[in-house]
Length: 337
Image (cartoon, one colour):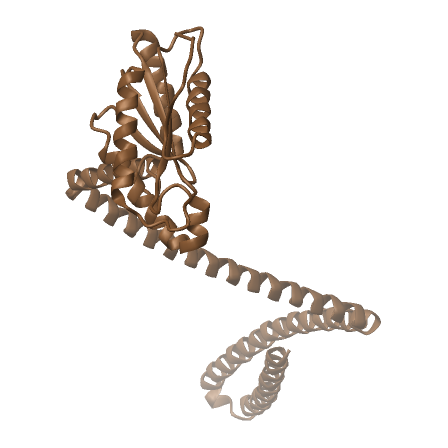
């Protein structure tokens, strides 16, 4: 609007100047007419001067008409803009509150969208940094594996073997645990079923062990079990034989390919080894030291028999050994074979 006002003022100024120039030229033309009438001897000069003035007058008039046209066009444009502005102002007057509210709500939505976009961009940047770091770490691991693959494989293989071994060992006594005992006993039963060879089982129980614990405490009780386990293991010589903790103060010895006579010999060796330890047990009604009762059983596995029968025979024999006064070996009698 300020530019249009300025242009209008400029055109009015130029028109005023042209009007004055026209008036001046008309005055000059009038003077020349008088001179023409009074000075005949200068007719040619006056005619030439009059022609020149006339040309200037026509040029000034043409310029005036052109600028007048431009001014009219500008005035029409200004009038139209004034009308449009009046319509807008009228609309704002009638609906000002709703328009203001809509503009405020629109601005709020735009700000919320910009904030959400900023949060998304920040999350993306963080994710890119995390992925980049993980990629670098993975590349380092891959390079290490490539450079030291054999050593890593050997180390992991050793750890796996160690883990497998630990999974089969009783944590306290360091002999086989119950899980290993059950698996090995089942495996040997199947093998000896095919080979039709005897499988012997010795179940051992520390006599009056609860009384020992009550007397000396659980720490010494654990030490006692460790010594008993080592003595039993040292009494068994073949690689195929297995000593395991059966539960609590009970131990089991698996003797593959061993008849009942051989199993009794091993059982006696074990009983004597425990007595030789001379672990003090002053409140024991059997001896003043720790003793062991043992039940021995042997079967030749067959389709008609089951592993549970062998275990039951050894368990019954152990019970009879306890009943017989403890520190005793009892052999199971079976008609199964």
